[in-house]
Structure formats: C-alpha cells, structure tokens
Amino acid sequence: MKNSFTSSKSSVLQSEDKYFQTLLRRIYIGFYKEPQSMKMLAIKLKTDRSNICWLCRELRQNNRIAIAKKGLCTITKRIVNYYTTNPKLFPKSNQLKLF
Image (tube, rainbow, N blue to C red; front, top):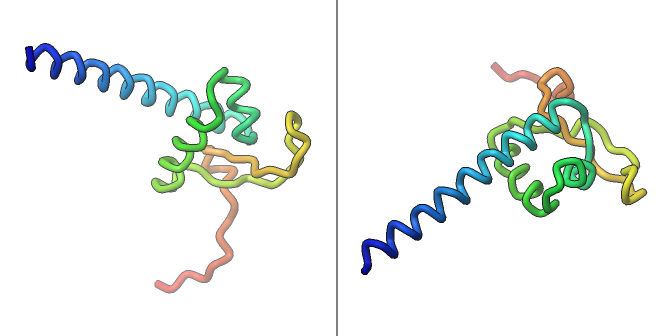
C-alpha cells in the first residue's frame, strides 16, 4: 500500500514540475518578445499573476530577466515595471569595472 501511495505522490509532483517548467518557458518567451508587466503577461497566458511573480524570482536569481522600463500598465493604469528577458534590451550597467 505504501508503494502505490509513494508512486502516486511522485507522479503528481512530476506533473506539477512539468507544468511549471512549461509555464517558465512560456513566461520567458512572453517577456522576450516584448517588454511587459506581469499582469499583462498573466492575461495573455491566461494564468495566475502570482505564478508569474514566483517564476520571475527564479529568472532574477539567474540574471535572465531585467526591468526594461517603468511605465503605465494598460490594464491596471498604474506605474509598473516592464520586464524583459531579451539581453539586447537589458539596461547598461553604469558601475565601473574593477578588473
């Protein structure tokens, strides 16, 4: 009985992991195509904004996403960060190079 529960639990975790891997890929591509806010991307992908926020944290920790600009969100009408995963659109660092 334990084995069937364990295998059932691991298959659920694997399916959740596959879902988040697919969502991470879709988020990366969505931010790559054009800079946009998390809310704008959430509506385009038809997913929860909190999932996008959580996965953006993963991208930020790996330096794969950056804030392209601040602007007015077309949905919420608030000033928000527009994110991008396109390295060509990353802001240039003004920190002096030490070495």
